[in-house]
Length: 103
Image 1 (cartoon, helix red, strand yellow):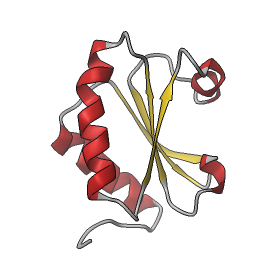
Image 2: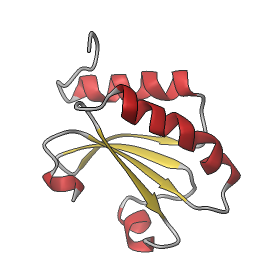
Image 3: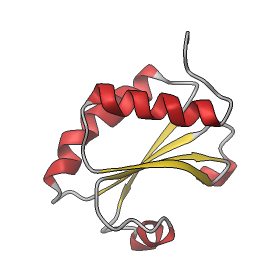
């Protein structure tokens, strides 16, 4: 579970029928590769796990969350390019004291 992860967790709340979700997915996967060892990426299909979407009050998808010990540090709603998402993740991680710079 994300609450038990020693690393911050990037959660991607998505659905297979969601076009913007399909657009953002490669960027999320690239961030996961770029930050391997610093961030854990978890993709949650909201159709299969509606309780997870409800728990995080996801009103629309894609919704991306950065969690630190299960606590939401920041959220990004809607699709954005890789550079924007990477900057958002870096800023969110900085608030946890776990910067990815220089890594």
